[in-house]
Image (cartoon, rainbow over all chains, first blue to last red; front, side):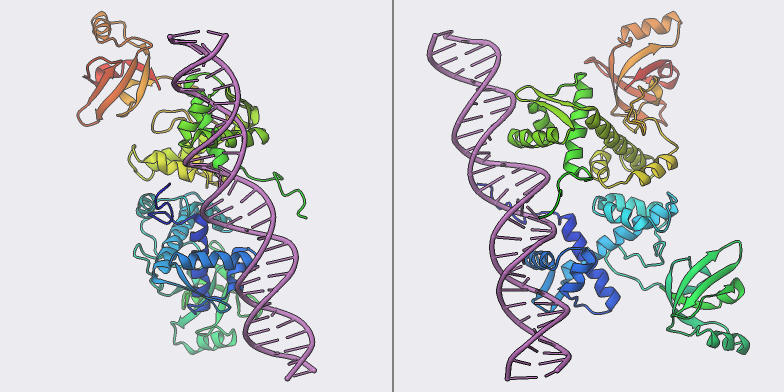
Amino acid sequence: MRRARKQINQMPTPTVENYLKHILVLSLESGSTEVSMGRVAKELLVTPGTATSMVKNLSQGGWLNYYPRKGVCLTRKGKKLAMNILRRHRLLETFLVETLGLDWSEIHAEAEELEHAISEKVLEKLDQFLGRPRQDPHGHPIPTKGGVINRPSSQALINCKAGMKVRIDSIVDQESNFLKFAREKRLLPGQEVRILQHEKEADAITLQVGKGSPFSMGSRSSEKILVRV
Amino acid sequence: MRRARKQINQMPTPTVENYLKHILVLSLESGSTEVSMGRVAKELLVTPGTATSMVKNLSQGGWLNYYPRKGVCLTRKGKKLAMNILRRHRLLETFLVETLGLDWSEIHAEAEELEHAISEKVLEKLDQFLGRPRQDPHGHPIPTKGGVINRPSSQALINCKAGMKVRIDSIVDQESNFLKFAREKRLLPGQEVRILQHEKEADAITLQVGKGSPFSMGSRSSEKILVRV
DNA sequence: GTATAAACTTTGACTAATCAAAGTCAAGTA
DNA sequence: TACTTGACTTTGATTAGTCAAAGTTTATAC
């Protein structure tokens, strides 16, 4: 008889880590702590039945609370682990872009694999090697070792990269002509902006405000606009 | 009815990769292509029954040939994959030591995890980043992308690190006093040497020839002795 | 108030990987 | 030639994770 084989000192499986991470991301995106089963199943690309049974296990393990036909809500323990995985993911993405020079578009899937294989020790060394970055290449904040997300301070629009989706924080110019231009283009605090192109050499950034038509700005103008991811 | 779900275009699982890699290493160590089931089971830390059933699957998949009660022997396809995994393992070990500065003793287990998560693309970038190293930190040769091990050329004893186990290749000095010293210490081609200590600052390397008693040499002498891992 | 549809849960089956324990074989010993 | 032993194989059970399909709730429409 193998004694107490179950759940004793056992690392969470990659699948457990994945469910928790995706549930965390969904709850961060929606701003609500509770996430519906439908969204979980869709996010993880599994059938609803699979999501239900997995979520029951996670609940059993104390990672989250499951309210049948309502949704799930991470426990403190679950959130801590999920944050840690998000940290691994974003540090790895940073490494893949900054150090190895992979393309922006390819890194997500790669990091998704590696994040379950990297140890705390290697992660710490990697963080050190990268200079303890605060944001990943997408502009998302990297959780701290303690599992806390420091909301990134706003950054100038000019520093954003193509593909990013940001929200306008403020306009740092009181000059009325500029403000008038900004109002015309709907460049107002709270608006969602999608960066379509950004060629450093051309000194121009092409963007789309909400669902409006795209237009370009030079660096002089776009450094006056502060945004958050 | 799900059509042809089995074995179609499916990546080998980490477990499959692990079995093949360990079988390759065992066969390289013993110099024989055939490896007994007992050794397989011991190497992979599983019960004999597990090894038998897994090996039958691998045989089914065309990775190796299984001769009941005799042993297994990698097919060309199996050897190619195993070499590829060995390449991943050794490149990762190199990265962990060279770039992240982890300790020699910790890297094996870390690389063992990461090797199953890293993609061909990331590996290529990593190889490039590391300057296409030929040897890992243990002095083992890194297989090429094509899956071939280029026997490493001999290197000076002075360049070996503590913990390495090497074999003497040749002595590049015709001066009789030195050769006499070498003969006394059994520093002769073919002898096995274990490097016990190597402090760069002290300019001394402490070693043990075969099962003789340990002694130290300075760099002047130890650069005249060529060895292979 | 019933009917319907969408969202969710349950059930039963499957795969990969593993172990324990019982069974078999082959080689040497008496 | 029969016996014993160690190496190996078979068998039956278990766990994690998954799907398909059938069943149940809940909310909304009529």
